[in-house]
Length: 251
Image (cartoon, rainbow, N blue to C red):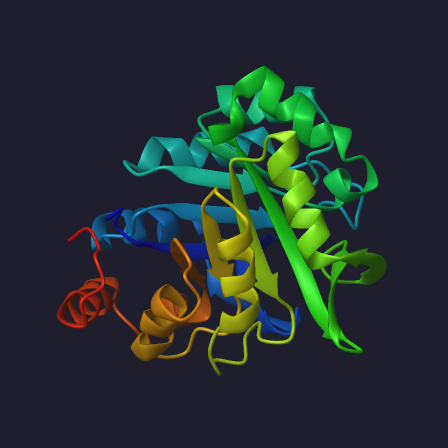
């Protein structure tokens, strides 16, 4: 069985790591490069860096950030925010990123997924999906959750896989920052429908929440932010707990 991955996520605004609840009410959580280096030392399997205002403010993710991160890490990292073209991704790849994450640009032009996979390989392409449960259905949202679409979650992730996405990063906006647990039912539906890995995001508050998302939610990786940023849960403690609960993790 493949080991389940623990992935701290660093949401970046104006060069600083921030964290909010339901995508709003942001507070400062530190320098992203310093935090990333700390997580690398503490046993994180991967890291995700997302410039959460890049698309909304029509601003591209800075390649300099990727270079700074790459110099201080010895684990894989994904970077996203404002990536709209193969050229944008190429700059980040050559700056040290292991994967890129695309979201709003892919929804607006799904061919972008195919272009990325064709140029770099599926393993380089992570499709991030921000979704909210509205009137009995999960709908995709854009621009850091600011814009609702009429695109249903399940058809979209299936199309993304067909187009060559190598991984799905699913964030439940309803659960984000609440620390009430992941959206396990929706995560399980995605995991069962796809053959590519699924990263669950939004709602982690306890170590048990990770166990639940790996067992009930069938996720391949669990992503969280504030509980790691503010040292509410230590990564090594989480991994030891998961091992005791029968979940395969790298320690």
